[in-house]
Length: 78
Image 1: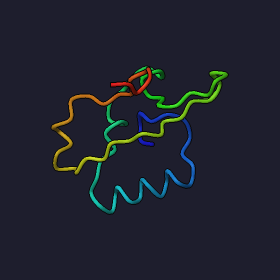
Image 2: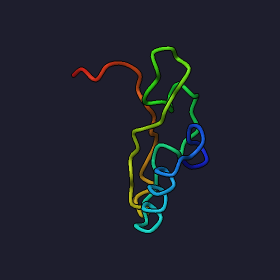
Image 3: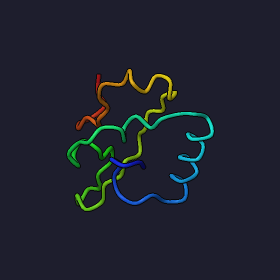
Image 4: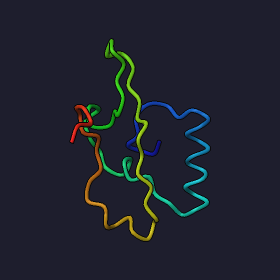
């Protein structure tokens, strides 16, 4: 999604993009250029397929407040 998104948009991503536009939201993760490994939030076991499945939605008024958005590699253990 967006200029710095990962891959090609499918129908669900187009619907989500339309929802963001109607509600004046910005997709935070696509505003900043990053290496491919910092865009993918899911990678297949054979390392051949990557997806960008986690997104942050920010009201366009607050867009300038974002400094950086990227995926962090590793397990979700806190």
